[in-house]
Image 1 (cartoon, chains in turn green, red, blue, cyan):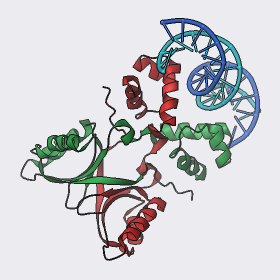
Image 2: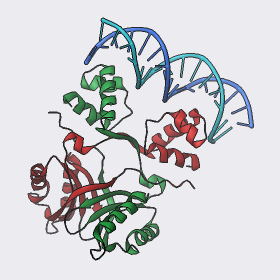
Image 3: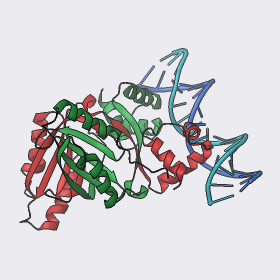
Length: 155
Length: 155
DNA sequence: GGTGAAAGTTTCATCTC
DNA sequence: GAGATGAAACTTTCACC
């Protein structure tokens, strides 16, 4: 990982369909050097995935919610935690789930078609979930920033 | 937007480096039909972007935090809100920012190198920010799910 | 890391339903 | 309207310097 890798990562995190030649022009390497680095970064797992980002609104997902979840500590804790994680992983409406410190145990990002759909989803995932003691939904009014990029220091 | 589009979107949201021929095999179309649809979906903004996802840990970003922010309502509200949004947009350590309903005004996802770095960032963005009345950090212990995919109903 | 030839992929005009 | 075919243009791969 040197300065070239950092520059390449900072570029492809915003557009991974640029050709090696285009990236090469910006970072000052030959196209094949860029390709070699990209292939290495992918093999090593620095680049975890290459994905298309879909605009939720255009596919009828008009609601995003941020949900703070507290697990019921009266139940076997490890089991409750792993069951909850499993449920999050297998629910397609859950786009992200963080295990966190603080008052809440998990913070979950949910995507739903509309409010009615969100109510059904939150009832199923949280309200009727015996592992959940309580939860608090915050509806997203406006996506201020919805990036996926991690800053990579160019040294 | 038909069933073919939905299937294509559900595929490229997990891997946008598949070739049109590979996608065609899975959805039951010819490669050129898949290409035309992908180009259309990109032009129409259904596909907002095509990006590489970088593993934060591998580039030295070991801390992720979810921060709930309450804006100081004693200040001119619209100005405070837009200044705060602007700050989030221009801060590379902020990967996401949601304007939300409920107790908090914003929920912010921050990426930092380590705890010391996080303290410096949160001091600058939140503690010393006159537009912020109070904020609450939750440190991410474990990324349970870190997807970017939105479910697209295949009819 | 660079170069260049081979293999693979996308683009686009054309034909068909 | 949308899908299939095939040739041209472009991109990636890989052996070699």
